[in-house]
Length: 245
Image (tube, rainbow, N blue to C red):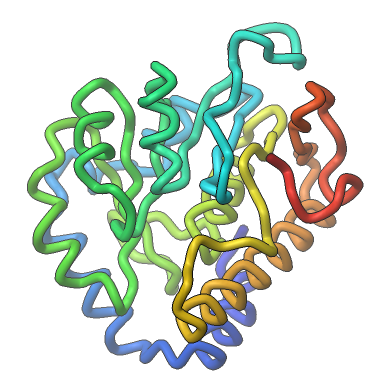
């Protein structure tokens, strides 16, 4: 998604959640400085090398969701690419599945993401105003291929393809680089693992935005967006209800 189309959504999200732009910029500067030179060079091409022209499964971390059963992939043809959204990395690794790509803002099980990076996963680290300490702590720990992203205006060395949460941002990224089809697994916009009512409400508001942004993407993109049902069926996004586990 080009930034002029994304900017109004970004401004609305920042206004709703109270994200100061100055902190967003500070995090982006920090991430750019922490990335190795290779990570700042042609970052979108590094993602494209993994996803362009391939069916791409975006794995979410809905409560109770497992890793996608690649051994019974119903889409035919070449093995699909797998993109894990942050905490879904653990579920993939537990099932013996090393993601092709991990999209993370470093608020999940980061050691698992570091381990997957060492085993060949490209990690797309996202900078935002609330994760500057995590960037400083963890970006130097990744041993493998690393690129960065943020949600603001175009910036050398960082990707901005749109999206808010790790899951919908992964879908936007796959669309940006020309995935053949985007297949959602492990998404649930109405359930969160959180007992604290304030944090639970905030997470549900974020999921509402994730759903809205995926609706936008599905309505505007020529790339088909599907959900992979537990029945084994691939269903056009939006026709199977909120849960795609």
